[in-house]
Image (cartoon, rainbow, N blue to C red; front, side, top):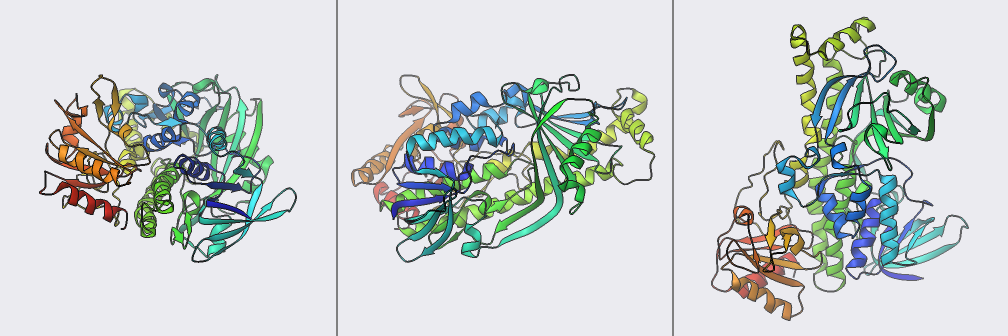
Length: 585
């Protein structure tokens, strides 16, 4: 029998992040994965700013950035008329800035000290696995699968099987994290996935080839290729690095959709023939690494926990890839859950705190699934509006009509305007900033302050705010040695933190008194002219939403949990009460 605090089932990005964050918090973990290796699929490559914050917390952010696509080579996405094999193929219909334009959009640089990154999961997960093994030697076990679990009032007993030998052993844990994509745990728990399934059959081909002679524009990451000569209407081409990016990338992934149930989607030779035909690359030498198949849909678990088992990542929600919200949501799930488990395990918080995980994350993940579905279904409308797919128009006339839309000739201005306006409908897919940051957690672990959110209800623009339930905004600070940091850096992932105004010393003293009683809490004053940290750009004073004598409390997951707009009669009693509510005491 192996005894641990938390058993993690699944060795993908969610499970590995859970192992890292919990080990950093001093929690004894064991991770098991039925797979022999980390992912071999070139999927889930976009890493938004919130996800990068989590990866930096894990101690791997700098390595991920170093391996990622250079910002200048992922600043745009573009839409093309074919790829090759036709006189008009490769013409650019439109180009769109994406994910902060490689750091040129001030909204992105003001949102976080970290930029949006791009690293395929097959390159990301080995970095995560090395870090998890560094923190937990002999406690990261690939090729070990869960076959059964039982729960009682005190914990979970799981039966694990070594895949290669069939040997079995039991693991006793206080809690279990299901990060296995729903492959085993959901069935054992009776969890149901709700939503839209099997909207289309998707096929992805990961291959190596020199496409530099056929590609132009190194600033473009994702190429959306419209196909007048094929009923599928659209395919997608994305560089995969791993050492060169842009037009000279060594590896690529091609995504294509088929009607659900189409037998060609399950025939490798047919898929490769279709790819060559659609891209017009029949004569190009290529090395195929993997052909993978998946169905388009968006589903959400009917609950995010069952007893002492908590679902994260794909076990809790599955998204279409459009908008890049799946992997990012998984990392946010784990960040929300890890500190709560650590606090309950060491007695800092009551078990009721764990109920807030599903209360907070399920609505946010539901919204993310909906956004991804909206993004995906928009492409169907786009193909229709561009006159692609099954139409009565002659194929060559379709080529000619869309080629005119690529022209800068004023005579074709109306055709060009129509195409650009149709494609502009996808702008939100590459600007999910508000979806990423403007969520609001609601649970007992958040104390409302009676204010109304300033967030854009249609997600068109991100408005940072230090309002309870929202992520802590980023602002540049300086200490008295004039070393710069971010407000985010003051949150260490292990402690509650009081951020008070320049005249809010009584809040810091109250935090210090609670810390002396054994609570993990710290406090700092921040002001433009005085404080433990200075606000040189007056950015924090603008964002904090309280006066010089006020304060906020920030949880270890950087969620603002409480705000006082000004001083109170008894700071210690008020802060004690707030902390008690957050911790479920």
